[in-house]
Length: 202
Image 1: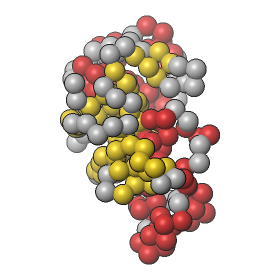
Image 2: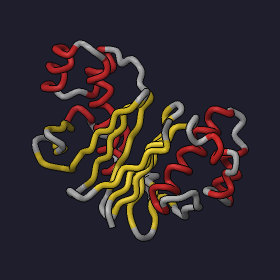
Image 3: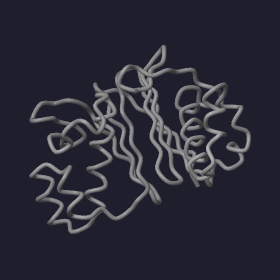
Image 4: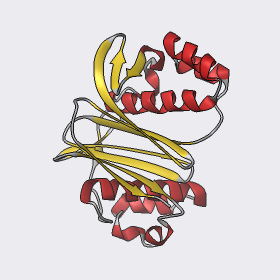
């Protein structure tokens, strides 16, 4: 089995989102449909749709639970899900995996310096744009989802060189950055593996 990542866009998936019972069921669907904020409801549904395509390559329900850290777990592989604005990303892999997607937005210098390592901070000042910082942030978030640490870890100890993710100088994963119209995304796997990318975007 190869690792599969799906990037989805609400606008491109509007028709599929009208029939959420095809890809999300039971209590999960009930909890999402009970949300009063339509934007948040669409984000959660889109994330479930992306996960369905990551696991089944079609709109079909995915059964999964959560471990003690709140990380999603399922039989037969590892999953990771992210959503931001009108975008969602999901991954299904035979090896531990983390994925993150962020809608493109400005990143202030103060925010960037909280998660960039010293070498990245140097590159950030040379680059002069928030796009570099956002790409680094997405990679680090994906890595921390892979480890299950989330916001409790030190993202400034994680960096990437030529697709290899290091933590404090030790090889810790493999990254596949993906950029598109309006988003930055990244897939990080524990070991190097073949990857399939599916786009449900405009």
